[in-house]
Image 1 (tube, rainbow, N blue to C red):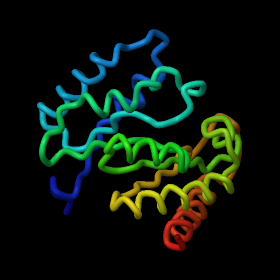
Image 2: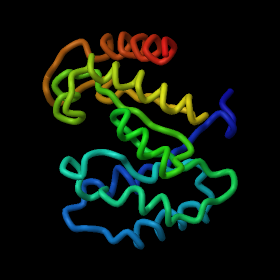
Image 3: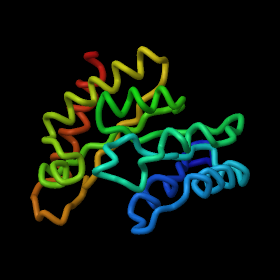
Length: 173
C-alpha cells in the first residue's frame, strides 16, 4: 500500500516552465514564485539550471535567483546541472541537491545536452564527484525513457541499460 510518505513531489515550474518562455521573466518575479511555492508547502523545488546562457538564456540568472530566495526549513532547493561546471556553479549558489538528466535517446541527448550519451555518463561521474566533495546529493534522471520524437526504437530497453550505466558511473567515483 502506498502512503503519503512514499510519494515525492518536486515542483519544477521555476526551471522547466520558465526556461521555455519567449519573454524574459524578471529575477525578482522568479524569486517571488519560488518563495510562494515554499510558502504553500512544496518541500522540493527545482529552482533553476546551471547551463550555458547561450543554450538557455531564460535561466542566465540562476545564481541570483538562488541568492535571493527565502529558504524555508525542510524544503530542498535543487538545481539541474549537465556537467561539472554547472555542478560547481550550483554548489557555489548553495543548491541543496543537484539534478542530472541524460536521455535514453542518443538523438535527444545530443539535441538537449549537446553531448553523446557516453559523454553524459562521464559528466555524471564528474558531477557526482563534485557533489560528494561538497556533501550534496545527486538525483539522476533518464529522459525519453519510453519514447522520443526521433523515432528511435528500444528506448525502454535502453532506459534500463542507462539506469545500470548511471548506477555504475555514480558508484565508481
